[in-house]
Amino acid sequence: MVRRQCPRFQTGGGVEVTAKIESAMVMAAGIGKRMRPLTATRPKPLVRVAGKALIDHSLDRIAAAGIGHVVVNVHYLADALEAHLAAQKRPFSIAISDERAELLETGGGMVKALPQLSGDPILIVNSDNIWTDGPEDSIRHLARHWDGDRMDALLLVIRQASASGHGGRGDFHMDPAGRLSRRKPGHVAPFVYTGIQLVSPRLLEGAPDGPFSTNILWDRAIAAGRLFGLSHMGQWFDVGTPASIAPTEAALTDG
Image (cartoon, rainbow, N blue to C red):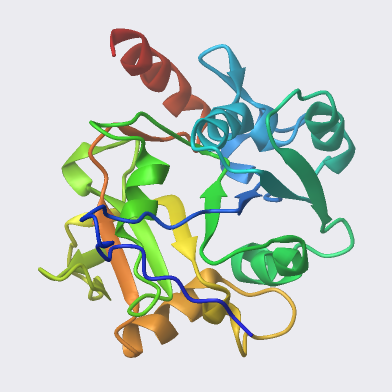
């Protein structure tokens, strides 16, 4: 049975309750074609930005949020990534979801890793984004707004004008209640997905077998009115190509 949490209720003393995030998954199995030639000899999560591997930026944020267990999926040059993770001294345990035999894409990767993940909601983070916090820790900000009675997923989104290094036309519209809807073909949308989300295991119920995109699960949640967004209050950097590294480092230094 899936446990459901509704964190934003008031206790008898008027204290707002925040959802407890027991575990997180870092998506790190991609081949990193856009990051070539830097990924010719290393997996993309190990490309160094601002003095450390890309994945370490995400792991630092997860540690700051107090999460106790992390699963990392691996595929391309998996041995190098596993060795890097094994050398980590972190305040959480790290487990590997091995996709060497078959790259499962984002949705399939989540399904494979689910038996190693606990709690409801679960944090899912892409390993090729870097973000800074606004007035509040971004992961804790998500946890404070999680409502398991209404949501199957809560995505951290950022206004397109503030999405550093991102060249798309936006991903989502968001209504006053926080519900997300897709950008229509040929149009632009004001919000970009940051690669950071909370999901309930409910989102994965009835998921397809094998490789598939998380977009399939999101579209199902949108149809049910259960996909929500939360606007990011800090900086966010899409570090997808070698050309994006220097501007990101400069912005982080200025910050």
